[in-house]
Image (cartoon, rainbow, N blue to C red; front, side):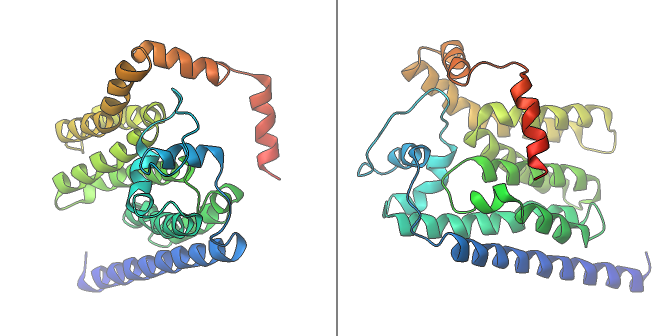
Length: 259
């Protein structure tokens, strides 16, 4: 690569970064403008907040819950369970998360693709609706986007072990928020790692295992202490959600998503 080409690449990366930061700020402004910071808490949010603040009334903690959201909420919830504080905190957190999720993709695809992808996702209904809520939807989505981008960019990294450590951390956050969902992230990345010789296989596989352990170990420990063991917890969660199976009702959802 010539010096001129390298300089142009750096300029494009800077512009992409500026674009992502601008989108994150715009997402923050939209959240404040559309919902404000005083939208009442839902039942799921109360369940998560009650884990880290005793003054929040505890409703019930079921087998389908995981500790990721209480951990993410803790910095604000331990100080004040007030609606305004929690909403403002999560608006900032999830706006920053939108930026962080797409940053790795600047080096995978053309730098301009990352801001465009962030814009397309950040303006969907689900992103706007959950953009200030204590719910796992957006953290999981951000984690999947970020982890896949970090993994994809590994062959281009000068210090791949640092990138693998970051990958493990991101997978760990997803696993802590919802362990079962994290398997749908880690398993394909592990499979592609095994067949792709350009990547440090041992380091990546170890990173994925460590990331999964971050979420699964608390889940398994709590399963033994509260729900009668992992299998009993799995069956309880599965029955509470109506079972794991294909349903015609599920297929009817997808055409509605195009509305």
